[in-house]
Amino acid sequence: MSATSTTTRTATTLRPRLLGRSVVNLVVGVSVLYTLLPVLWLVLAASKDRDALSGSDVLSLNHFSFVQNLKDLFAMDGGLYGRWYGNSLLYAVLGAALGALVSIACGYAFDKYRFAHKEKLFGLVLAAVMVPQTVLALPLYLMASGTGLVNTFWSVFIPVLFNPFGVYLGRIFSQGYVPDEVLEAARVDGAGELTTYFRVALRMLGPGLVTVFLFQLTAIWNNFFLPMVMLSDQDLYPVSLGLYTWNSSATVSPEYYPVVIMGSLLAVLPLILAFALLQRFWKSGLTAGSVK
Image 1 (tube, helix red, strand yellow):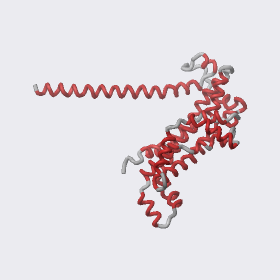
Image 2 (cartoon, rainbow, N blue to C red):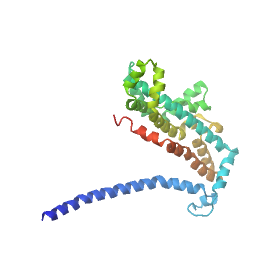
Image 3 (cartoon, helix red, strand yellow):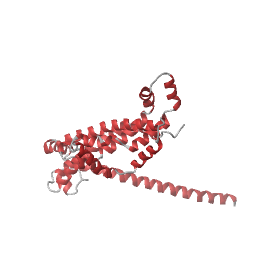
Image 4 (tube, rainbow, N blue to C red):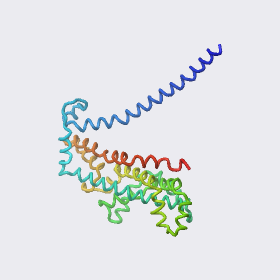
């Protein structure tokens, strides 16, 4: 009797566990498909010609035109896509690098220094995190217009250097990676504040710097609304805005459709490459402050 009741209890206990495990696996599987199927479609569509795309014949093995689509992409409108790609790399890589340095330095200052109204100012930084970037586009345009920067490289580049969320992360990383005792030891040895920061603290903040850089890189690379508001010269467009203009033209000129898809495929490669190369730094940065 006792053995039977024990077996019944064990079976009853295992059922919810197995059911819960099955539900989790199902949710994970659906999430993976939801993420990968658009990417798979993009890869397949980039290898098809215009007839296959207009006939929704993407999954067939016929109409293979990957190399031709690639040639057409860089030949369209006098090779304008290559200019857009270079602009995006300049905006994103240089902007993310400088923006990450600024954010980490501000976060370090908020963490390690005492000054008047520090917490109130940091509260403003947190409040700025919750403000959508699209809301700031019009004020930024008016400021750029007042200084004569509209339709220039600087009208898009300067605003991306300042990221409130990056400052918040910089403070978190500083709290987790830079012990006060190490800074005090450097000061006792005669190091000034700038020397202490650049030679001691910044090296400890390396994982945090890479993490903020990746966040900034993704945000700037996908930035669309600010360039659309600021720029009218197509030579200054980033990839996101350039592909949007071509996609709008595809409704009238179908020859743009294959090059838009191929351009979209190439546009995701820098982000994938950045995350693959900097993955180990990014993972370690995400655990900042979790272990003391």
